[in-house]
Structure formats: structure tokens, C-alpha cells
Length: 180
Image (tube, rainbow, N blue to C red):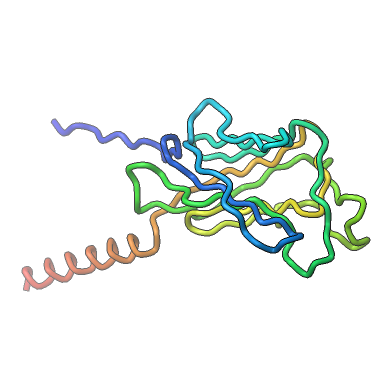
């Protein structure tokens, strides 16, 4: 009798992620801290208790603790942002972020000094790459209890898929050779 294999869903719990801030007024990225992903539990609270950052198995949630805003500066630099780096699934080094789904409070609005044509806050304010998520919050007002929730989907990294495909093709070629 063959045993059944169990597949554990990907989980960031136990991972260590690095938090960076990029303030628009300086245009210089700054390392903030490294936090361990625990669940349940909030991993990060800003110095001024503006918001919390809670990472769980496959979700990142920023929740406002009070009314706050990130001022718009006419510096020519990108808007202020929070960058969460080195996001991994412990024990699965071949997985990376393949897609995200974003939900957020509809009461996050452009702050008073933002240009008149400043866009509404949207999923476009969130970007990602293989092991990184960026939340662009510059130029927006966040009311107390507002939130941004990002659900992550993890997939095999392209190199892993390529190796797997090459292995399968090699095995198929070997069996074809053996048959002939």
C-alpha cells in the first residue's frame, strides 16, 4: 500500500523579511528593520504608531492606527513607499511570488497638498517581484482603521521550472531511446 503524500500550503511563518522606507523628500532608500514572520501577531509598528504591518502565511496587511498622511513633495523623486524584501517560504527556496491580489479601504484619499491630478489610491500602488512587495503610499491620507491587504501567491521560480522541464524532456528522450 502506498502512503499518501501530504502537501503543506506555502507559509511565510518563520521567514525573516527586511523592511525599507523610501521617503520622497530625500529620494534615498533607508533600511528600517528585519522582522520574523509570526502568526498570529503584528510584526512591525511604525515609530510614531501610525500603522502596523502584519504578515501571516501568505498575506501582508498594513493597518492604520491613527489618521496619518504621507506628504507630497515636489522633489522629482518617486513617491514615498514601504519595501518589504527577502520574502521567502521557509523550506521552499524554489518558490517566489508569482501574483498578488490587493484589497484596501476606499477611504484612502490623495492628501491635501498632492497635485490636483493625483490618482486615487488603487491596486496600482502595490508592486511586486520574486521576493519583494512595494507599497507606494506617498501623497495619500490614511484614516484610522484604513487598511491595505495583499494576498500573495507563490509559484516555482523560472529556473526551477526550466530544470524540471529539461529533466522531463531528458527522461522522455531516454525512454524513447531505450524503446528503439
